[in-house]
Length: 380
Image (cartoon, rainbow, N blue to C red; front, side):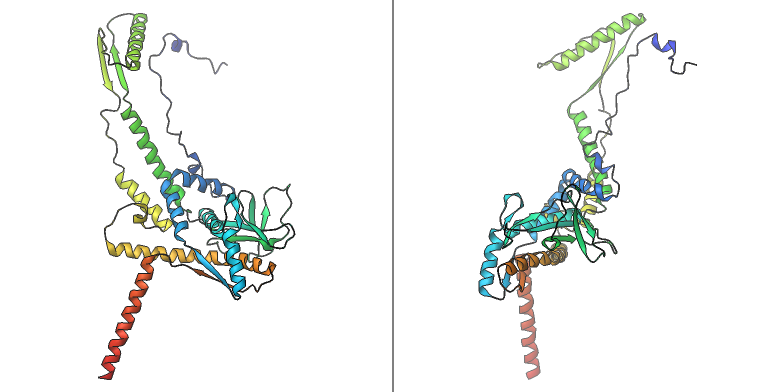
């Protein structure tokens, strides 16, 4: 039995109309649609998500910059001077210098992937700290060393030697799930919402490409001519129309017979995307914790609401500072011990912005005025 034998009737005449392949699957960020909650794919997923949705990348970069700077003090003045000189000149990954570069990269990894790994690199004779290294999460894995309370960093490449001194490696997990050693990215929950947003953007780009670059549908209604003559006439019309479209000069198309020319898609109305895009961006920004006005989005003109959003952002930044402080303390203690100083050190962060300082000053003024009034009333 010949199941694959084609019907002879299909080969009698050549078809004049062929279906065009759909471009709905040609999405530039197809990884977002193939998402599966596996640890191995999350790194590629979140990297692709930041590249695909610029507002997510801008929000994370803004959060990292708003974390502010800090100063470190030891008990001994000489130790403080030596420590500050080390922190300002220590070599970091990517040819940068200064612990601030290390901390910003560390926080960027922590927010994006939910975990970050750094390493304190000692000199050749192990006498001092020579560099700070931000490890790529593609090369290492954080595991439990006998207990979830004890973390261990291992290399993914089994051909390489495992790190000997785990005390020089600094792993940090962001909001780990109970009983696990796996951090939670702040972008968790955004792949689905971002996928819908990218569908809208991709559709808008496709529609505008079609509308901006006008395409025509030329319909020829032949008379009672033979099929062979009709095909030749249709081919001639197609060739002349293509030549007129490719010409750099304005050309008129003249034809004999019943020929109808229409613009493809001219009668269709493009859907309004403002409302769904706004709803999706609200979901994204609420998850990232960044006020819209800090990204140039004006959704509300209420000064009171902007102040409340700033307070919420301040609490988020304080939480991230609490995660970074042990990292800074460990680096400083390692340096002080290797150089023969007392390892007691304190980290003091700068105020997040000037508005906080003004509000604190106003609060102290109000308390002083209230206390003065109370003293005046009690004396009477």
